[in-house]
Length: 136
Image (cartoon, rainbow, N blue to C red; front, side, top):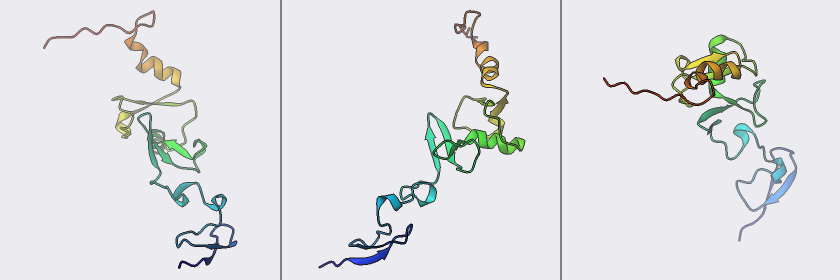
């Protein structure tokens, strides 16, 4: 027969009884939800829409969940300051997961990024130009 044991909650220090050896919290409200304390922590690196996000909750421009785009962190380290929210980063080889500094280009704004890197492929009406294939 299994007996209940008395344990103290890691968060609120409340005394409670449990049948489970690994239970260390008195309720779901006491279980930590962010970072390494979360039971489902996977290292703080996630991929979404081909971009890589890193868990940096203390960063001034982190998302509500505490994540920052890796390419922004790489550029910030290279230039020695935080990027302004309006500044954009262009991946030269168009691979969003390739965050080497030699593959990144800092643009003043998203609008200038679009003009410099994407508009040159369009005609005056905004349509994509036809690419002539050269035979070599």
